[in-house]
Image (tube, rainbow, N blue to C red; front, side, top):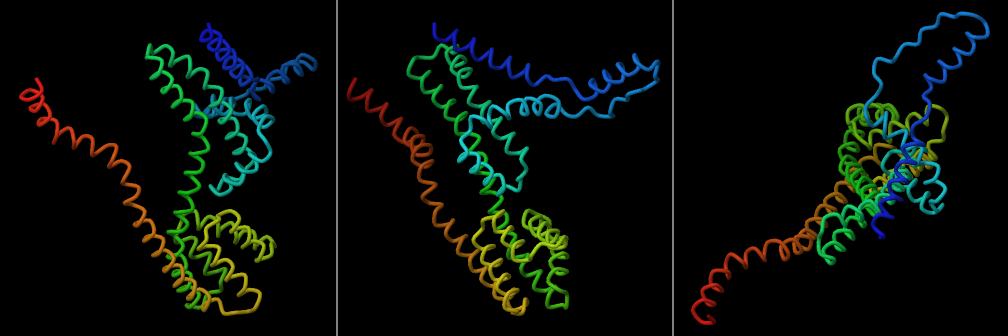
Length: 307
């Protein structure tokens, strides 16, 4: 009795989302306005051309649904969670308000799909225990999947910034020692090394050119990246700008420190590898090895001794 009720509620929820997502397009609104104006003032010859491309499937279906779900998702999300998501989206390089709304809408949709998953699992005719485990696995994936994916993207971007920093510092040091100013050398370095770190420094250059204080712009780069090695370099630049220290000296010392820090980070990851390999080795490799090695002997012992 509970399964049909849950299925009905889930179907009504999905229908409501689809109905709220289907709205009058701007083209239809303009056409209706022109039709009313023509009825009042006489015949008007107006031709509305369709765009060359209506957009992909994501733009025509998923984005309107995300906009429809954004308001209820924003309303039910706690402020602390919204701030956490905004912070993590900033670390991924996507700090726009629309990105936050889309993520919250996808989070709400994944939670709404949990009853649908329960209904689909009930249709598989599994045993109660295995059906419960299957539903629990799907529910955990739907509940924690969006946050885990967002955290994964944050870690990947920070790791990429960490790996790009030594090469950028060395190229920046060569440019400064060749006679270029810091901002000119940084602009050439950004053009030569595209990536997330180059995007952040390119944004820093844009903020400085429009009149921002260099200290505040550097602190903003630290807020958008949250990488320890990069923070040390930015603090050194802030101190050099405040006390008038030579940029070349700072860059040379920071390049050496970043190389040492990167080497230590690689060694740390290498030491963690055996611990991470232990679990797949115990649960995946060893059981199969035991079956291959001990299986024939166990069968022979059963046939000759026990039976």
